[in-house]
Length: 399
Ligand SMILES: Cc1cc2nc3c(=O)[nH]c(=O)nc-3n(C[C@H](O)[C@H](O)[C@H](O)COP(=O)(O)O)c2cc1C
Image 1: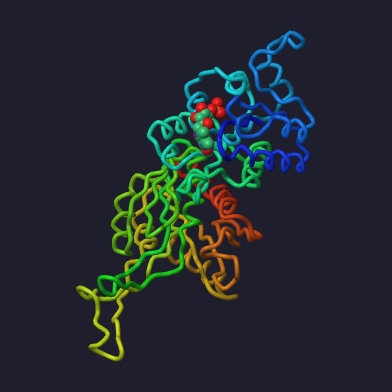
Image 2 (image 1 turned 180 degrees about the vertical axis):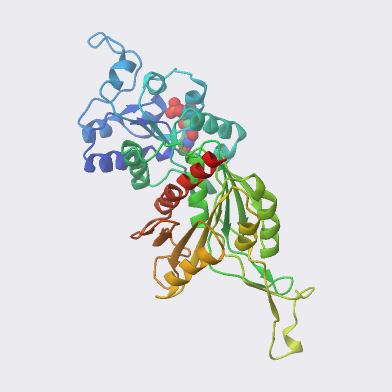
């Protein structure tokens, strides 16, 4: 485990402890700057191993430190990874023990960046992160929130447990499959808002988290990802193209425009079924009437429309249904709209569907159904892609 110089360096003590709880032995390498933030003695005490800091050993321990450290290691984790170390790793510079170890290491590498939002969003950092991804490094995206410098935005080190989850996924061979390389995946996310007047709308509770998780998972599996998004207030991720489509009509236009170039469409957005026939100009005045009747009209069913237009795309729809008959309705939706897979979730169950970090889904495919236990939206996303990818392959081989 490499530790670099940033405020979040203290959190890597937690990462180390969780890794140990999972049964892993951990050797720590620190940059000199990291030592300004946390003492190497803490890492040495917790790991029970010598901590590497200097590229050159002393007279009593001569040798090729950067090669020795790597001996017997299954995986390299850098957490937190500073902008500086990320830039060195991307360019192949090897001026510290940590970056020399990186260049000399042949196994999988997981990097968990942490830095101020401006540093994270700087084009140079974006370039470096894209390079690391292209080099096969597994990124654990930083989270968005209040940073140590008082700013709010993306850049905060991912939670130690999430970092360890990523390490476990890589070790288990669940990560790193680039089985969607060369494919374009179009994902709709979020919830549309249909205006009643200039300031009011009819909306829904979709947060966009499921669509975001699908987009990140597809990107990590090598796909070109386009997200058509409606009103999602989540940090945008690198390596994903976003198209804004706040209303059902805008979402229909954007999806139609992007659809011909995609290999797989995942319609995850909660698109309004009805919209007000006329949105009032300005703000409706409540002093004018005691009651308000808004006439609504049906919106276009985007999935059904695209299904009729499809050439060789795989189509995945979502069905957030309420109650015990929901699964049957979801099965019906799959057949009626002629889509390949419908992902059912029960909006009546606490913790399924909207807003939360987890979901409980049933994947209804052409051959079989998979009812999955509660799991993170990222894990759900992986399972959905696992189900859809063979269909993309099948279409490609037929073409
Ligand atoms: C108080 C303080 C906090 C810092 N926090 C971060 C940080 O969170 N992320 C980062 O990339 N750099 C941070 N820096 C800047 C790095 O320490 C600096 O770029 C250093 O060269 C990184 O060295 P290293 O990559 O060899 O560890 C911070 C600097 C200071 C003085």
